[in-house]
Length: 139
Image 1 (tube, rainbow, N blue to C red):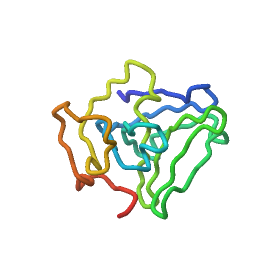
Image 2 (cartoon, rainbow, N blue to C red; image 1 turned 90 degrees about the horizontal axis):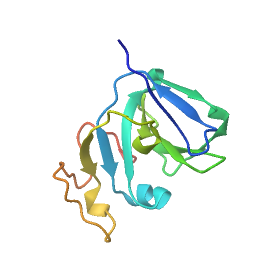
Image 3 (cartoon, rainbow, N blue to C red; image 1 turned 120 degrees about the vertical axis):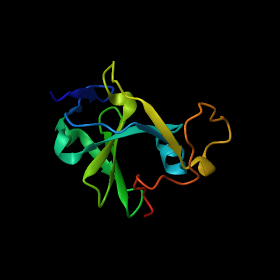
C-alpha cells in the first residue's frame, strides 16, 4: 500500500500529494535558506515522479544559484520546494504537509553557517556543510 502525504501553501493555491517514500527531515542552516524563511529550512525529499501538484501555475521559481532553484507560492509567498538541477528528487518543506505527517527529523546541514541567535541541541547529527547523500547548491 502506498501512503500519500498531502500538503499545501498557506492560502491553498498550491496543493500537492507525495505518493512515494519520503526522506527524513533535514534542517538546512545555510544563509540562503535562513534569508528565504527567516530561520532555517526543514525539508524532506521525494522522487519527482512521486509528486503531484495542483496549482503549479501559482509556483514562482527563484534561481538563487546556478545549481538549484526554490519554488514558492506566488499568492501567499509560502516557501514550498527546493530543486537541484541534476537531481530526480525535489525537496518539500516539512511544514507544508498536513498533520500528522509521520515525518522524523534526521540531521542538520550547513551548521557552520547557522544564525548566531540560536543553538542546536536536539542530539541529531550535525554537518558543517552537508552529508554525502544530500546534493547541495554548490556541488
